[in-house]
Figure (cartoon, rainbow, N blue to C red):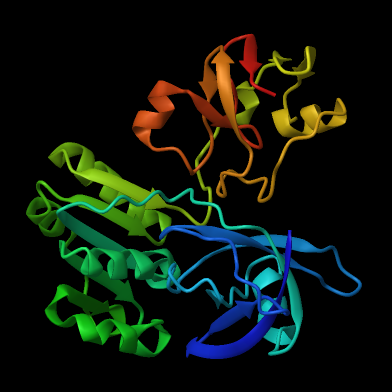
Length: 313
């Protein structure tokens, strides 16, 4: 856990607060790669504290600061609202070390798709692609320019960046974008409807797609859940997980330490190696290939398709 200080607060766009976080003593911060995020611990006087994940959108080479952007979500649980209302320059905040769930590997040709606040993890990826001399393009959709963060920063890339404002009747033609992306690696972040359509189109076209989802809205028929056993290989314990319970909760209840954060299948903190059994993946972290391989699972939301799992815990 790191205790950092808010060096600056910036209005990145309407409803988006940018925070620049530094070590109070001026020490270098842990290194990170494009696509990484940090957990921000949000203390709320008189209310339950929250933990939320925010993508790092600054320069990985600048170890003096972390930069995040927080979208105000009025219909959320209050985490972003608390940051917008209470966090100011000079305050201390507790954050985790960076974690890279949205993996990025530069290639000769890359296409980036951003929807709204989904631009945040892609911003350092775009910079890395430019620095590597790659053939890349960014398609960035939002409601209107005033609500879209980092527009001024992206202007320097010229025609490589295409901006779509829905208020002006502009829409991304995803089938055409995917068709033109043959042979390229694609990275996307944004609303679920955008990512769902991209996953179908890219699978049909054979385009390598990596996505990051901010919410896990997978539809699951929980009424068909059944009890199963989980063997914890490192501790020698075996636990039973009943319908309505999570593996993570039962592991913790058994006195075994297990890292976690979002508890909703989006952050990847609870990723655990699977040594036996068939997981029932219910997260928004793993892609189709990773789900098929089932080498790991997110134990906060995922379950077992059979009667027993063996996990490396």
